[in-house]
Amino acid sequence: MIRGTVIIDKDLCKGCELCIVACPQTSLALSKSINVSGYRFAELVETNCTGCVNCALVCPEVAIKVYRKAKGTKKVV
Image 1: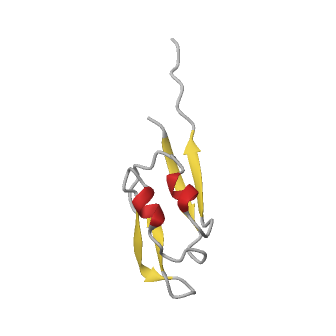
Image 2: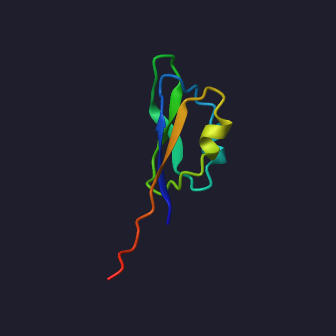
């Protein structure tokens, strides 16, 4: 299975929740703390991210970077 992760620039995020709605894995949620601008920001809360990039595509602040982890290769014996 393909795995991914996201890095969210918490100081750019305005907490619009578009990324949370767009995530098919429900890997994102709003934080309980606030950023320097006074907004609750999105954060990765689950490790089931597939790197689908839906969250980054809908982010109006371009605050999300998505990384995919390479699939492991099977060794032939």
